[in-house]
Amino acid sequence: MASFQDALQDNRVPGRLGDVRLRYDGGRLVGESLPPPWERRALPGLLVGVGLGCAVGAAVLVGVREGSTSAFALGLLAAALVGLSLKLESRLGRRRFVLHFRTESLRLEQLAWSPGATRAAVVPFDAVRAVHMVERPGPRYALVVEYAPENAEGPPRRAVLVEAIRPSETQTLHRVWRMLSNAFGLRGAGLAGG
Image (cartoon, rainbow, N blue to C red; front, top):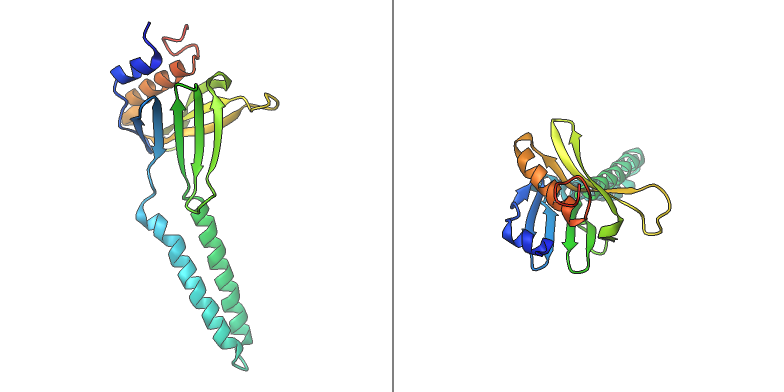
């Protein structure tokens, strides 16, 4: 009997679905979200630069006798710009998921631009309860995995695997949904017993 890994090698993985690039890499299916456009990546740096300029202006105005109000306003603007920059940068994080077929585990990663801020979770295939195709406004679709927490207490958790799937990609969406459902051994996907 052929393994799921053999079946995956025989059936090519689509190169892209929604905002995720997919590839098969020696016993692993890897999906990684695409980087945001350069405008979104450059904006936080630009805001920090303007904020630093405001801070320098505030420092210069502190020495002027009647510039204390202006210095305070520039200092406040500098702090607001740096805060907005940090908020925008936190939204730039990317996602990655890796299905390890040998260890039968799903690794979910939230990649961050700052070093050491990447969050990862490893979910055993047996803990996965469902793979959902979710309709988003626009119309767009998302592929979401639902899994039980490690200690099996509390409500199930959800993680977005693929976002921004266009209506023209629904055939590929169904194919990837069926492939993931079969990998996790879920019923109702066609091959996993239901």
